[in-house]
Length: 457
Image: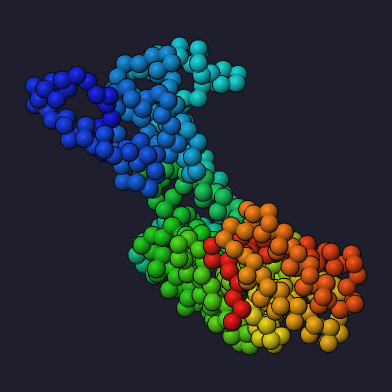
């Protein structure tokens, strides 16, 4: 908490006469950037006590609640209310708690400054928000029923029991796949969560606590299995995950969260056994989503290293789209994804077979994909070009070279010279220019920032 008031003459003596000591507060206001602290949603400064400062002209979008105990009207009133109505991620609405009956002046102020289109007021009674929450919960439960999920049955089960954990695991299997089903459910949960947070701390929120906790736990379990962002973990989540781990046979890879990013070890998958186990699995939807998450994460890493691998991502997205549209069943998708996984593993080791470093392989791929068709001897010539080019660029890529016209020109000329001297006849003049441009684009994007250096050893 912090006090925010403008300084006054003899304020220390005036406060002492009232038995108060403002000196430490004034030192804090002078020495600390309290305005920046309050704007930061991750800073522990959560509540400020104001008189006039910050009521107008101060913008902290994450601020959600204003407690008013001071008579105000007109412009000042509208500015004060506006402190809580700024748009911010995850924030549905702001709340005004009125102790001074300022809302008696609100209609007049709105008529002058703030009426919306059609005269709609931006200020609503809290009961309207509670009604919106109830409607959102009903919509979420209706969606669950459409997919044979009875949330009431889970609610009626002891929160700490194995039966509840088992029911949640069964629900995850029903809602996790295909993508459309999962995303629509998560959308319902996101709206319910946002409205529930907006209703709190009103006691009306207690009525919905059980059902909201239940559907959020289901969503958290789904997020854990797919790696889609940090899950909202509740106490029951560890039991959910243990049960899911025991029930999933093809568990040769893991998805865990670190700094909000999924970390996937695709190389641990045993590609021989899963297909046989999958046919008899009772949690096929969970398994398919885990495999999709692992492949997507692995693809993102591979493409960051070498953009010519983007064709693998196109193939992956095509498979998912075919499954979502119903043109492939889940067994066919699983088989195709396993085959793609093997191909990715093989692609990652290709630089060893080609006798190139990872960076040399990127240049080699740019020069050979998608054309031209080359003989074995011609491919060997291009490998020499890739090695020679990186060696030559090592001396040219100085600090901030992208901002220097001379340095950029030297890099372009080096690329053109090496490619002109080393490329076989299969490259037409047009193709030569295209390859020069693509290589320069790659070098410009990859080797422009600190850490983007060339390794030639």
